[in-house]
Amino acid sequence: MGLTLLATTHRVAPGLLTWRAWDALRSASAVRTRPGHPLLPSLRDAGIAADEVPDPDAARLVADARSGDVLWVAAPEGDEALMREIGALVVDDPLDVEVLHGSYDLPGARLLDLVSVMDTLRRECPWDRKQTHATLVPYLLEESYEVLDTIESGDYGALREELGDVLMQVAFHSVVAAEREDETAFTIDDVAGAIVDKLVRRHPHVFGDVTVSGADEVNANWEQIKAAERAEKSGAEASALDGVPMGQPALSLAAQLQRRAARLGAPDDLADALPDGQPGDLPDVRNDLGARLFALVRDAAARGLDAESELRTVSRVFRDRVRQWERSRGPE
Image (cartoon, rainbow, N blue to C red; front, top):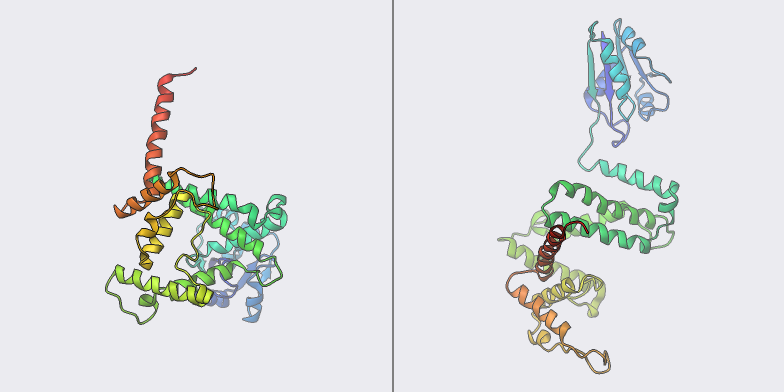
């Protein structure tokens, strides 16, 4: 005699239970759950009769369990309030109560909740419903910079939240894309599937039979695979600079273009010969500031530094000095 509380997760398909869970369901003298529980169809298929109880009473469950083995199939969200009531009832009058986990979340299972929440927001929130890929762009950039800021400041406690904000943007774009009815439509599963395929394809030393001697050879293989992908996509027009986002900040853009050109083996004088203004293109631009900045980015790379990070570091120092100066002035 006793009471078994069967806990399951809604993030696993109903019916995918442990052997212990199925054994407990078959051996119980009474199986009870709320009407509409997602496990009910699987129980019927297995020939297990379950009593559907709209308003479960903890005292009744405990009383019945004192005369036979009763199994309560908890709601997917956990039935915590009911379990607390049962726990309080058996403190002074002990009863054999077991919480049996019939299914468990796999790593990444909470991503299913994110998909569900985003679908709901897209349907029911007026603001979320009106968003497009274009209107969401500023938020994606803002959230990405906030991730960068937490890492550079060493605030790793806040990193989880900031990464969640970026992940939400991925889910948001995916739910917007899923609404289209042409060949450009895709879902969050398509996004995940594409990056999985790319990672497997670009890591033949992990998922294939390629042998590498170290990280340098991994990088070399990576570049070869990317070049083959560009050639397949663009044919004779393929370039090592394909895929460089021209909308990124200018310093990081210059650094990425220079890195790509260096990997390609482009002559150094292609950078040296950059004019400060080409006739016919920008006739009113006659200063050399852009060329000097481009050269500074190149110099930073040669010294193993990132110009964007170096400038940001100096900017942070300047910010702190301004704040200190503000405090020293006192209230105005």
